[in-house]
Image (cartoon, rainbow, N blue to C red; front, side, top):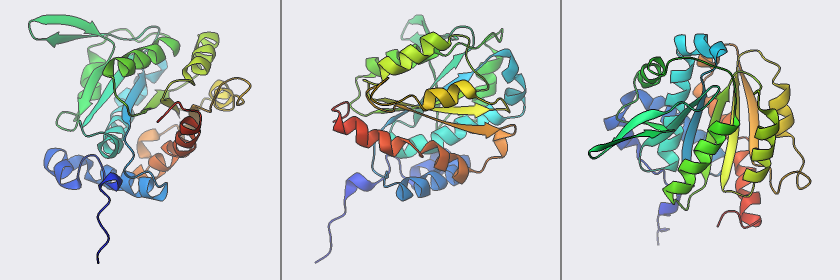
Length: 258
């Protein structure tokens, strides 16, 4: 007698659908699947978010395609976790950048804008060019925007947030306090450092003790170096998934996730 197929261990979006909708992401999708299998995460569901630094020092990373590539890699991962084929983007510098979004006959300002399997090529650069001034670096307002979007979505799945930056924020105190408070939420923050900054603050944020400062370890960090666009998909996904599995276990044990 054959063993029944366990449908919970399949990806949210099939390879066939990715190939038909976004053939340029096939390699990223396959690489993400390999990493998820290694970490026993295939079949998990999560809402994937991408937060992008738009401070002035980020200009070269938008120009050389590094940020666009990260967005594509985020989509390749999200196709396994979420069946809507969408990654909400939040752009930040001094404040969160807002976008005009039409809902029926009305137009309102939104702190997030989507990138999708059926609309991703060159999209990051196009959005970036329309956002104007590149300011300073404040994390907290971007984190608040993600929390707000996630809570309004009413999903039962956790959130996996890829938070990209090239340096420490000016609002360290607010960011640290917010990350500690957010540990009670079903949201994991994976910080990715572009460039050659020592990232002392992010390393300290990553290492905040549990349970002295937060109920669970809800953040990870890794430096992508000075040429992040050259990182292989395999390397990036391995780094992205290095702490997420441990957080899932801890969050379930604490009742943060069910």
